[in-house]
Image (cartoon, rainbow, N blue to C red; front, side, top):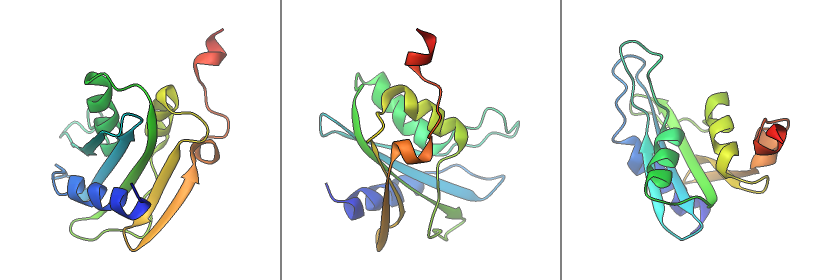
Length: 134
């Protein structure tokens, strides 16, 4: 799957976002090693803290269906109907992705017309992981 295709799936996922408080809608498309695609959107809550990001929604959906290895994720976001040129994952999402994704896992940001790919290790250079517990 191309980066542009993956970003387009993230755009589709963003349409399902529930963001009545911030208006900032995010979509994510996560590609499993199996080839299966998992889409997620952000789901806000009036208490704010229980809000769940699009990236974690997609990852939790995948894990709940038995997928444990991943190739890449695409993320798009922006206020209301606007899609920003760049929407990086928050720190919590980076940490959750670190549980299942290796250093070379691809993170695709931008828009379908302007994809920008990064290695996960460049987004979380000093992350805490399983090996730190040994």
